[in-house]
Amino acid sequence: MSDPVDLLVHGGTVLTVDDASTVVPDGAVAVRDGAIVEVGPAAELRARYAAADELDAHGCLVLPGLVNTHTHLAMTLLRGSADDVTLQEFLGRVVPAEARLLNPRNVAAAVRVAVAESVRAGVTSALDMYWFHEAAEEAARAAGWRLHTGPTFMDVPEPPDARAYATRLDWARKDLAARARSAPGTRPVLFAHSAYTLSPEQLVEIFALGREFGALLHIHAAENATEVATVEVRHGKRPVELLDSLGLLGPDVLLAHAVDLTGAEIAALARTGTSVAHCPVSNLKLGCGIAPVPRLLGAGVTVGLGTDGAVSSNTLDLLGAVRQAALVHKAGGDPTAVGAEQAVRMATVEGARALGLGAELGSLERGKRADLVVLDLNRPHLTPRHDPWSMLAYAAQASDVRDTVVDGRVLMRDRALTTLDESAVLADLEALASTTHDRQAPAAATGDREARA
Image (cartoon, helix red, strand yellow):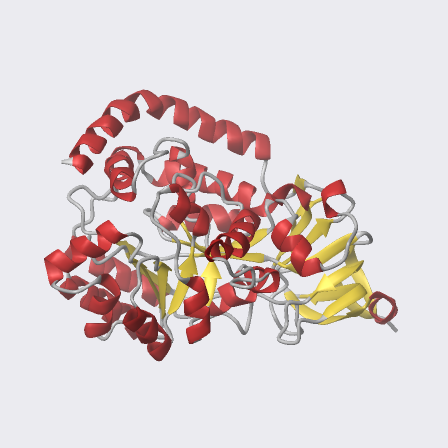
């Protein structure tokens, strides 16, 4: 008798991204109850399992779903509104616009577009720091997509949700308490925006709260030299140096960007087990610089990949970030600085480890959650097929993704989304954007002047 499973993906080359870098030609992945039951030769698994649903992956590459370790999904609402500016000018535009435009309905509409874009790009989960995370979570859950989110702290004069800091602490405590039993493949998350929008005392309180509930703690740090100088003037220490002095670094902490680092700060990240979300596209576009990823990796720091929001990077294409990460670090003259396999791992299993979820996500192995992608290799730019790692890092495009599976559920089949009405989702956000554009432009200019002052 054949063993019943919910889904069998068979016939493609399976890139497991396990510790041994196993590649299974003409392989298969069997899925039951949202988890991977077995990975192996297609002939063996097809004989062993009777599947309720199948994906024929002949002529395709099967790989783990991509993990976006830093983004602001609902920024799709503001895409294209803050281009060709510095980080500080960017914030001068975006923060006032968020105060005016964001509410649960707008965030949900923007997140649905972000989920559609991500699913099409083979991204199966993301760490999302943004306002109204409850609305984002509901939108993602309805689409069957894996979202890692939670309360955000950013002590600005007019937060979009109008919560004062003290009120926010109580609200965040209740939110974290409700997540005591997180679903498989998720964990509680708490976001502290940065050391320049929160005081040291606030950071200590926020991190203590997160640690009380075993949450992942995510914070922007050392994104550019101006940020570093700002924090140093205010607090007498650089951002990472400050976090270390307060005892806030650790294996439960993920820093976004980490561009401007000293050797001592890299050593501190390694010593404390702190991880980094590398966002090469956003960092380049904002003129922030290039994170010292080869030095971080050499020191043993876990590095994942992120797209950042669709305002600073303009797309949520994590394969584009893979290519950029594999290329930009070679500019120093070392073509081995970040190799193809390392870049792919940063977008999959290393990203999962950065989230503290390496035992559940990021590779195709028995017992892990069934988040996977089928990538169509029948393309001129993917022919001939010599090395799957190099093909992914240097040639593959988001449009090559044919099928996307999250928790064993097929969210895109043959390039058609199955859990979202794509036309309606796009039309909804376009309508929102058109009604907010006229109000947004004058304020954006004002924000620019304030930022330059």
